[in-house]
Length: 265
Image (cartoon, rainbow, N blue to C red):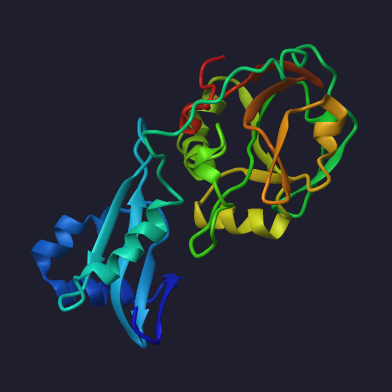
């Protein structure tokens, strides 16, 4: 990239994308699919000029369809970094190692949920043992990536680590299905701080809140499986179905990550 270039999320309400779409012509604009994206759009600027944009459209039975558009005169190898920047956080490689069932969640069904209060991304304190008599889905994940932030070293080689953003998108896309199947609420939960999680909720337009557990309190109370990498202790991916203060069912291990939504009661 040249000096003065940078990737940022497009500001809502401005005409940056419209200007770029008009600049490339109707045929290229239509083929790019940018008009149909369901995600926020990310633009690549060179000084004050928008020279590329990308976004994705979520599919019900897949991860996402990526849309990329580069302005004429900038369609070289150097601008493909925009596609890589977006796709690394929204897609799942085909050759990821599959997590094995190590028995770390076999004790959970029938376990009472502890009296534990966690903050959600809406600023509300949620008490896990007081979620109500109906079913609540809590999907627990290691760490979501975000554009412009590197994932931990060797992330793809850790069984079950990659795929937190596609998983969140899957819960978003199947949110109404979960409610129709009898769920009264859905939460994501990780050890990331609330501000980091809030950016994910806003960027992915999630219709539910995420719970922050940086002290791994739930892991300690329920003996949930975790792993360590790059100096971080992270949750392993699993989904809890809680009913009337008791773990009714657990999904573990989960693979592929975007197939973790329990849409059948």
